[in-house]
Length: 293
Image (cartoon, one colour):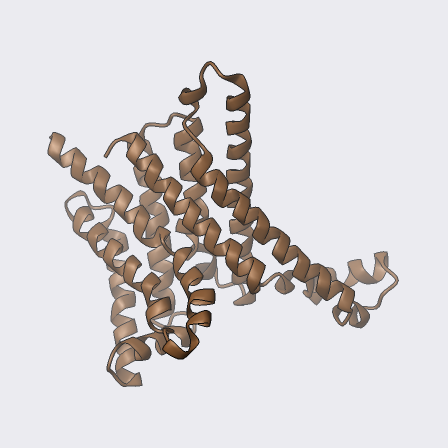
């Protein structure tokens, strides 16, 4: 796989991540209230610098509208970042065209700000889950994909130097997913529900299935860094990353409620594309390296 192919794959990845997040922010919700309604963090600030008591603040319709509008505004920025992901091009394409080069740099800024927004969102999910560190790093593939694209576009970094950071992002995502699957953190109910909706098994078997899947997440995360085992581990990551993303739609597919299936769960699937596309990027690189040996 050459550098241009890697850029194309990362552009598609970033587009899917940003577009999925954009739709969910604009049409649904995001955990911004975990910050704005944090009494320990904001109580003194609100009562010192506003004329409201904490109770008035958290029950204020105006504040609720502000939070909801902030969520939607971030969603529209994610939409801009999705467009920027496709529009951005390697700098050498505009070597003699200064206006286009400046515009391309602005697209790069949008990418980086989008990455910071995704990191902030991961932090809010982490905060919402009582600061489970694994919750934050489970999103590593998603919030680091724009950075990987930016590095290839603007730093002319050799693709070989990017492979290790991408492997680390994959390992973080799969390992942290595994921590929930094995029950190190409380196993999410949706994990069990999706398993029961897709597979013809009972609940105890579903819990066992998830434990095994979690252990495999740990195993393949370690295998990524063992040269002879990396390629089969990546094939598993591509498959499992694809299946866990598709599971959002398959487990919640109902003919009588297609609007909800494709109005919510499709977008939940879309921003998880990175869980399969980043392993695919590394696998294609390693396959080409083996062919040239």
